[in-house]
Image 1: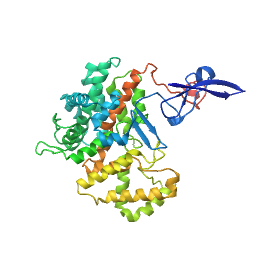
Image 2 (image 1 turned 90 degrees about the vertical axis):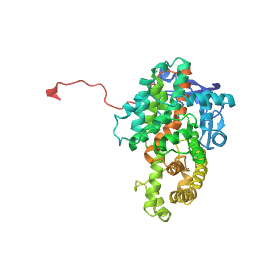
Image 3 (image 1 turned 180 degrees about the vertical axis):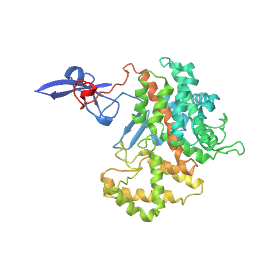
Image 4 (image 1 turned 45 degrees about the vertical axis):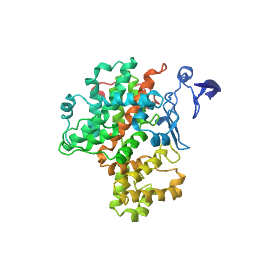
Length: 434
């Protein structure tokens, strides 16, 4: 961190105290308030951590005003256009894009870790067939620590690396297993001669009686979805992974906590909610009824929300949304679905929202969830699996962030404080006098 001087806090009867100010390579400066409580007896109050930097990181940077997303300094647009998902994984994990030799080695290591223990099948059978895939996935990921306990020393860099590889490699297998289980179909084993994403699609859609031949346009589209979702700074699930991991727990438990957090409809479930919104509008009349729908969105008493627009960090067009819209075109063209009614509806709604002062003033631009649901639906992925796909893609970001935290000499167990407004000290009365 670069020292940027001091910030002075004045409080009480003219008391003042100075705190160091530090700057990163880009982005806002930070005021180091770690000594605040010890020197003043006060905490800061920041619900939702709107103005709090919980850590220092070199992995992902977002400029919400510019609509910019960088992985290790590389713009997301360039990575999505020029790299595949495993190259992006190498970048997030190790800090640099791989050369040909490094890439071949990394792909080989991931590929030969894609199988999971056969006993996982017996564990999976304990779930109801109609269980939500995310409930199943949370359990499967957490259970991995019981199957791969040979590399759980978090203070050993080699153990951390092999756990990272196992998580990245096995997550597609687990996601596909949870899907097949819900259908009552046999699990499909991974194949080492396919790419990471093609292998996942085969495990999802092949059956013992009918082989699945990956379409390269569709494989590339899903691979791009993985890249766009690989990491996104200190979001809710990533912060959950860091907080859980700060206790010293094993990486499988920490990632399972991230999966559970991502399940929330305000986080990983947003693309599912967005697709459901579009389908509801379509069922009520489609493009012809957009005016009525938009009017309801503007009415604070209607309870109708515009899903897929706006973002906690981005106050400009989400750069991932632009790429996802391009991907949507490519997929629908490849499948002969250029006139897909949901896509036409989404384009019309986007146009209305971008031209309406109500949404423009509130900076409600389309986010990545707006088009990703349409793409996944076109690929044949059911709505219930959307968040599982998100978990698969985000695993590398979670594990990279966890690795960075464990390696940070300043890291300690997370322990937020509170503004308590409950009862003050009182005495317990005998039961007959209460």
